[in-house]
Length: 85
Image 1 (cartoon, rainbow, N blue to C red):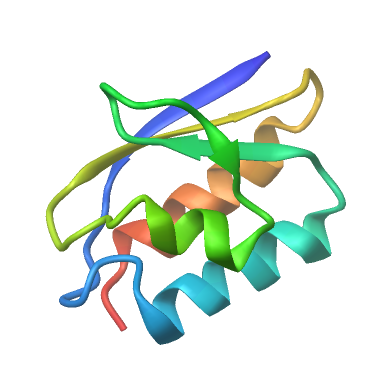
Image 2: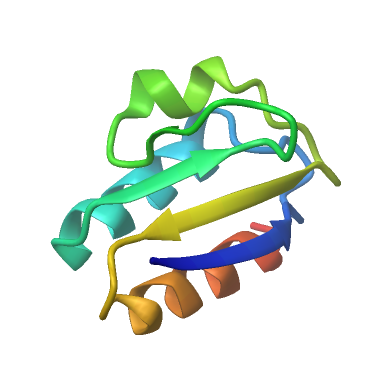
């Protein structure tokens, strides 16, 4: 299982547009990806409702995880979250 830790750069965190862009990128990848805050339970990163319920703010750290062989997908998602809109 691959895992990456990233700090969210978007000024609004993972809300509205940034969350939709993130979820869309997960869907296009075809990989099963989960996202969680360091102290929280993982949720489906391909679900806009699940991502929004995490209440991720600017500067929050999140953990992305996926099955083996999807490290390139994780790297792309990390870059997406590292850059502010």
